[in-house]
Image (cartoon, rainbow, N blue to C red; front, side, top):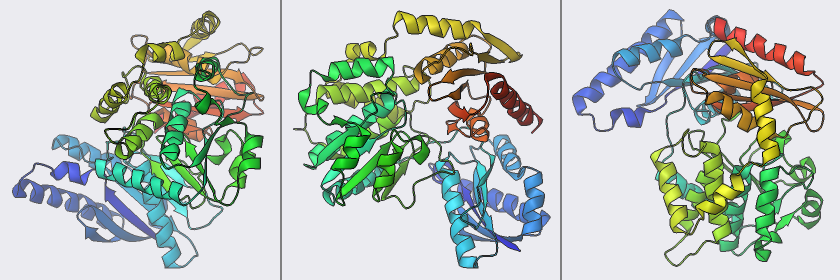
Length: 483
C-alpha cells in the first residue's frame, strides 16, 4: 500500500524576506539537503513542487516506522534551524489507503491544510476513508503569524458576496459563549446590516454566564440591536433556503449553541481563531481560521475595517463588545498579541469603543471571586511547575469562572501550566488548561476530546467522575513527558 505526502515550509516568505540572493540560495540548499537526507533514510521518492512545497510517495511500512518515532524529522529540522539562527519549521499532510491515487492525494492536501491552519510545525496523517480519524504529531511550537492583509481583505470581500447571495444571516457561537464569541457575533451582524440583510444572533437563555448577563443588560439601551438576539427555536422557524449560518469563535458542530439550528443550514461560513480539529462542517462557503490571531473579535473587527469608509460610524455597543472580546482572549493584551492586535484595538477605540464599559462588562462579582479563590486553594503540584486543581464534586461551575481560576494559577511565579477540573452543567466534567508556552495544552486537551490553542485549551467529558478525569489528565501528561 502506498502513501502520498506533501511537505510545506511553514514560513518560507518570512524567511526569505530582506535576504539577498546568496542567503536565499543557501537557505534553499539547506532545505533541500534536509529533505533529501530524510527521504533517502526512509526510502522515499520526493520532488520539489515549488519554492516552499514538496511532494513525496512512500510505502505505508515506511510511514508506520516514522509514526513510531513521532516523526522526529520535525524536531531535527527545528534544531538545525536554531543552530543557523533561522525560524524554520515544516508541516506535512500524509494519506494512504485502498482508494484511487487521486483521492489519496486530495486527502493528503486537506491534511496539509489542517496542519497549517493549526499553526504548522506538525504532521497530520489520515487514511483516505471517510470514517478514519486524523492523527496529529508535533505541534510543539506556537504558530508563526501567516495572516496577511491581502488575505483578510479577500475574506471580507468573500463574506460580503455570501451576504449578497442570501437574504437572512444567522450568527451562532459556541455553548456558554464568552465575550469573544458574543463580540464577534455582533461584529458579523453589523457587516450583515451594512449589506442591508436581515440578521439574527442566536443565544440560549439557559446557557448565559454572569458577564454575558451584564452585557445583555447593557444591550437593553440599544433596542435595534436587542431585537436581533433570538433563541434557537426562533432561528429554526425564521430560516429558509435563502439563509446562511455564520459560526464564530468555534468550528466544531458539536459545540454549537443549538444543534438543531446547525442541522437546518446547508450554507455555512466559519470565522475562528482556534486550531482546527477533526470535527468540521462539510464544505463551508467560507473558512476563515487563523490560529495565530488573538481572538475571533480581532478577525471580525479587521473584516469590518475593510468594509468601512470614513463616513462609517459603527455603533458604540458593537465596537465596545469587539474590544471586550479581544481583552478577554488576550488577558488584557498580555498573551497572544501581535502588532495587528494593537492596530485593531486602536481602530475600535477610534470608532468609539468605551474602555470603561469594557471593564464593567468583564468585571468579576464577589461570589465569582470567592469561587475562583476556592478553586485556586484546591490546587496541587503535579510537578514543580505544573499544578492541577480539582473542585468539590458537589458544586457546579460555569466555564468563565473556571477559566479565570486557571488564569490566576498561571500568573503565580514559577508555574508554567495549570489545569482546573470541575463539574459543569449538563452533567459534564470540564478541564480548563493554561500554559506559558512550555507545554502544548491544546494537544493534551485534544487527546481528551477537546481543543483550543497552544497556550489556552479546554475539554468537556461525559460519564466520568472528577477523580477519573484527573487520572486521565495525568496519564496524558505522563505520556507527553515520555515523548
